[in-house]
Amino acid sequence: MGVATRLNITLMFLPSYSLNLNLIERLWKFVKRRSIYGRYHPSSADFTAAIEQISNTHAGDLASLMTLNFQQFENISLMAA
View 1 (tube, helix red, strand yellow):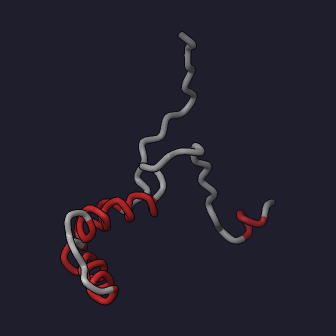
View 2: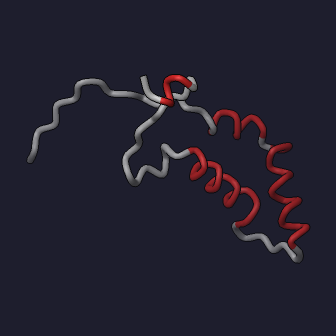
């Protein structure tokens, strides 16, 4: 039995380049879209406030975005072209 199993940790092996599967990448894309793109923040305090405001105003969107509900495929046979 491995350490992860003893600690009740589920390991999820992802492809090396899987932006849509990586939760932090989804969060960063959402934050950039909602608080950075096309906006000027005169100070770091304003920038921080804009990012913190996201959790208040877009809580529902964030909850649905930050899930581990992935479509999984079992026993797929791939044919080379």
